[in-house]
Structures are given as C-alpha cells and as structure tokens.
Length: 212
View (cartoon, rainbow, N blue to C red):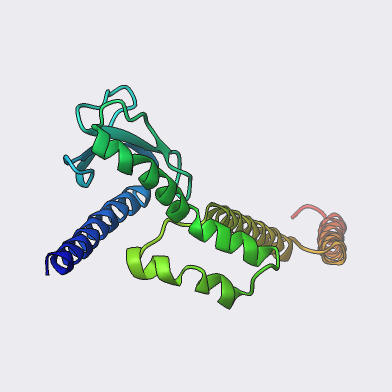
C-alpha cells in the first residue's frame, strides 16, 4: 500500500509540476506577443512565474527575477542572466528558455517550410496544432509579417501611381488637342478678318458720303 501511495504521490507531483510549467509557457507566450520591449519576470520558490512587468534595459533584476528582451514582433526572445535565481529556479530556467524559443519561432518555421515547398499549407498548419491548442495565440512569423508589410507598401505605391495617372489623364482631357487649337486659331482669324473688312467698308462709305 505504501508503494502504491508513493506512486500516486509521484504522479500527483508530476501533474502539478506540468501544470506549473504550462503556466510558465503561457505567460512567456503572452510576453512574446506583446511586441518590442524589455520585461522583468519574477519566479516563486519552485520556479513558477509569479509576476511580470515591463521594465527598462537599464533596470537590474531583483531577487528571484530574470529579464526578457523582445526585439520585434515575431523575433526571438533574448533572456538575461540567472544570477538572481535560486537552485530550484535555475533548474527550470534553461528549459523555459529553450521552449520559449521553440514557441516564438514555431510559425516562422512553418511559414518558411511552406514557402520552400517542403510542406503544403495544410501540413504546415498541422505542425502548429498542438502549440495552438496549448497556447492559442502564437507569436507571428517574422517572414510573414515582412511579406505583408511589403505587400501593403506595393499596394500603396500602386494606388499612388494610379492616382497620378488619373490626374494626368484629367489634365490631358481638359487640354485641347493640336487640331482643336488650329481650328480655334482659324476661327479667330476668320472673325478678325470679317471685323477688319467690316470696319474698312464702314470707313470707305464714310469717306464717300463726306462730312455731314
């Protein structure tokens, strides 16, 4: 019975340790989804994340704390030293670092494999199923973000060129053609000629009539 009870206690401890560790990874995933910045993370005595907050690069971690720097959305987290952690915390710390990097780069790896033709879109998505079930909102793929940024820039440039072309076309529509200008000049010359002849005729008649 004692052996069975010991086995039960060990299983319970394993379950409890797994839940605490999953909690740590969920908190790290939340931090990695928060964009660029520095974070300070505090652990409790057994290595579970107790609290986290944004901090400055110049801030020194206190007791039971370590830092994480996120260089950009979709970037790889940079962990600070573990000098302020106790032995139990130090046992967990390197494993957290390894698994956090795995989570941070999961979508990037899937995206890269799909772009390289190594995986279909469906298969690439399947590689993320377990992580998405556990952590829901995974950090984005850096390459996918860059592609989307370039796509938006290209779209904005296309709209700008179309707008410029529309303005040029409108100016061309308002500007008379060469043939139209020549016709206008001819009409003006004709009207001017008619006016000149009419004035000359009136002057000649006046001279013929003489002074009144």
